[in-house]
Image (cartoon, rainbow, N blue to C red; front, top):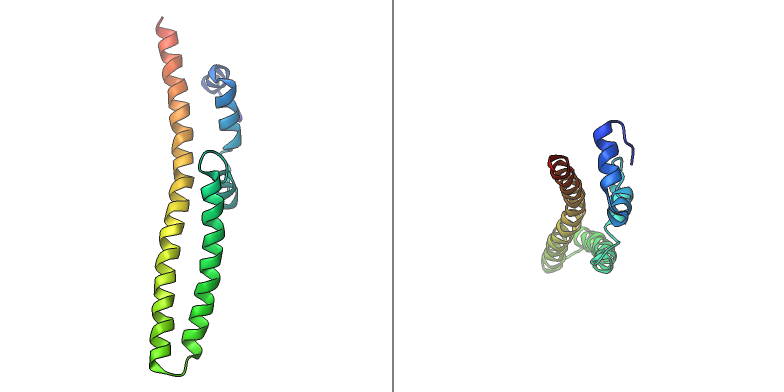
Length: 127
């Protein structure tokens, strides 16, 4: 975490060791893949890893179902594989929504931590 101005330096000094470690793990220049990796840690990290694996399985199933729908001969087969594609696509969408909501939650949590430290510093200055 860089401290370019005096306020940032004071905030960094006021952070506890656990807050410092948390903020250091959430660098400001994180890409999407780093954010996905960050979401694999913490209390719901196991669920996030499980959801990632399930998303890959659903993606492979979706590709297979699409292939079968395109190469199917009868109307019933086309309809069945097509509906399977739609069902898997919906499942994939809901799963990705949960994963991205978790990533956004970590970003919001980081900002809340910073605001807590700034408020504590303001109260310290008043007394």
